[in-house]
Image (cartoon, rainbow, N blue to C red; front, top):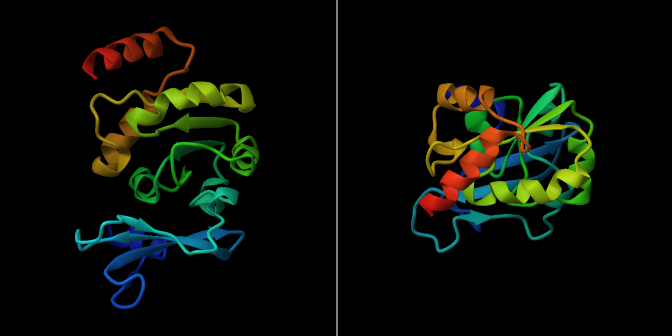
Length: 178
């Protein structure tokens, strides 16, 4: 949305190495520390480009805004985080670095809204997470970026503990669909 473009300082590059890409800055303590460049032409063999000196593993997209919330929604990609809202961060993929875990462990609650294929990796991270965790149970294979903010907020409200019966049942049903 226009609001997201302003809030996250999204830019467009018309020429050069990042031609025909939307650039989304990664900000930490007010400084731009990296960025994500996403192809919008659908002609590139690489959907995403990052700077050559990329240090994204040290940061979380939208941490400066989201860290003011007690509960933070953890998504994979920057567009997923934008589709969720101000309390969401992106991990830039299906894993967490030690530094990203340190940042996340400062919050009271984490709601993992990773893509369906990555949710089972959350279970492996539980021993390293020192805060309350809930997981969004996807009703289908869509990720957060393919949903409206309203749909995302509804799914987040219904997120469950990874030790709950609901999660175990969902995992069983998901395994049957794949």
